[in-house]
Length: 487
Image (tube, rainbow, N blue to C red; front, top):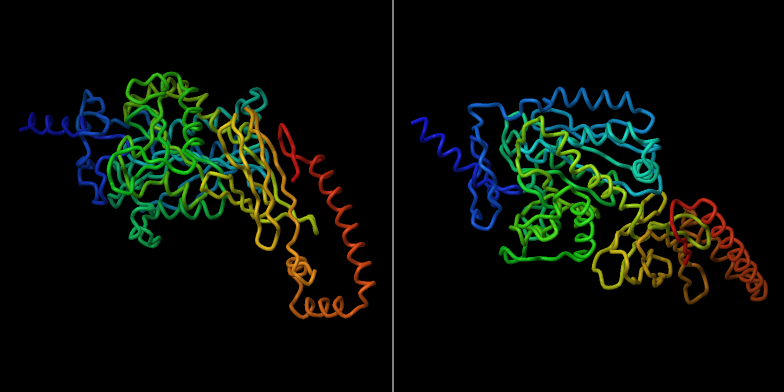
């Protein structure tokens, strides 16, 4: 009987898939394993030498309590460039701890933000270990490594080592309720999945996190394969085929940044270049990666960083060395590549919450709410038409040739003017009351035409001086562009 059970157990291990197990929305079984309705098209993984019943595969890995202690100790040891916070709790009440690393941690700046998420699946713990190693490595090498210094001083890096601490404790894929968290997000092809109140606590924590922080890009770390996966993860007809998102070229570029920097990911014989479109590999629905891109305005990759889901803990330092340059180069690409800038009003000089679009790409990037900074990731070596738009202001567009280095383009938008010659936004932008606006409108319309004309000329001259001052300040206090253009 024991032999039969062992053989059955080995069979399920052999047919487990990295992103997947079961593709539908049914719960994980009590044993922690799922049936695989797409096993024929998914990656077949290695067969472990010993079953979970004979050896604790988590031996040598941090327990949740040890992870919490390590995060807090890191926060104390590296407080000069980090802060610690929680985005919520798991089903069983364990805090979802996040490490933020920056030269000004906890303070909002006109810089891109990047997040790493580990341990989405409870039985894929390599990511949670590597993310703690990453944080400590950055702390130890901040003043010695130019790449690390670039990241700390120009990016706000947020690290969530474990999204699913309960699943890790239970040694199973799903959370404490048996739900696969990477099938629990609202999905573009499943409108019935849009009820946020029906989501798991861990899922809602991620969703709330993206409402608070405007992330430019992110990556989740998984195990069971060796490949950088990018959107879309699902298809409209539910069939397995390549399904490209609007930023397919940019995602392929970002995935290649990771793969080419890895020790051997790009040498894969199964995935060309070590990257894959998720739907082409096998379609899933309710995934975190697609939700980030659609609803969070965040470019996310799903990184499969180890063929073995539970490698011996002694192998973790080697796996870190294989992935070290990949994680660093991926984060650094936020400031080394793409188009960056801010959006201003020409009449007041204040930041505007602009919308950035690129001709030919059906995707909008929102500027930050405080500094109105935008960070648009694009494939280098190509020509683009970039446009900024704000309601009540005249949109502006510019053609750029994006070289290998990043480029900064600041937009200075003029208010719309009505047919009567009054500014459409200048009065309401002062946060004045409606009575005050009415008073000024009646006053200006009631004066003599010549006086009115002199005032217009005078205001135009002031705008000219103000725009020159804005451009001077932008050049003086620019972030880190290789080239600066004000439009």
